[in-house]
Length: 256
Ligand code: ADP
Ligand code: MG
Image 1 (cartoon, rainbow, N blue to C red):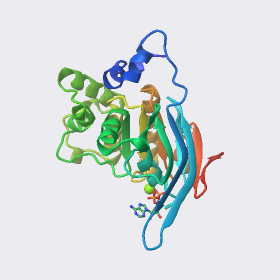
Image 2 (image 1 turned 180 degrees about the vertical axis):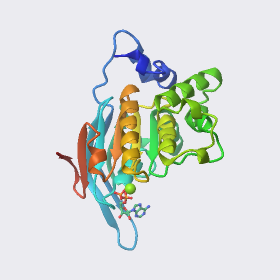
Image 3 (image 1 turned 135 degrees about the vertical axis):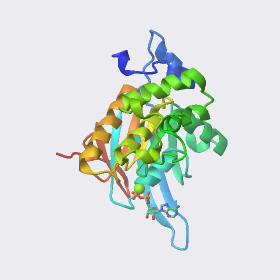
């Protein structure tokens, strides 16, 4: 593997114990990193409604999968469940052997900060922080500061082609550049899992295509696994596998 593509080769080891294993010469291959089994979700109310049932998914480090489905099919709900932001009715979500459905809110928050990165349709870049400060946020939440944080932020900004824009304010950037900031922020702390929810929904086709290439490249370069939620065929085709979410769970899709 070309380490020059890994700006922070030892970032994992700083952030989670599993990463330490991968630094030794006797590399331990963790075959499966995320295992979702029998996930079922419905929303209560006067007319309770099932969103989906029996969702199964397995991701290994380096896997990048698309989840497609009609609007309202539960794609965002599925990401929220995997992120531990919403509660499941039934089923299991294991990240590196840790059962997420058994954790309390504090433990989930800690795990999310350390091991996950997020990219959203609406960018969610904070308007009153500079580009570099936005990218540094996940690090400061983990107590990583000073020159180590600066080096990581600089490496990520270079990775997304924004080396010159660290001191800019978000309002000075285009939509595509803002989403590149969000990608840098999603990966700066070396998360195992990157969750992207319609990340190109607000971008024109050409910018979307650049952002999608960059997202894939950065996920792969950082050795993360990624889930890209999208209703776009073009976007889904940038992933290794495409899954379709239905009421009855996920099924493999083949697009030409
Ligand atoms: P998608 O992202 O695929 O468009 P969502 O996951 O946002 O779909 O929503 C799936 C379904 O669950 C929709 O019918 C939506 O209205 C419903 N839903 C989502 N969040 C809630 C909530 N907090 N309370 C009740 N219903 C919800
Ligand atoms: Mg959605």
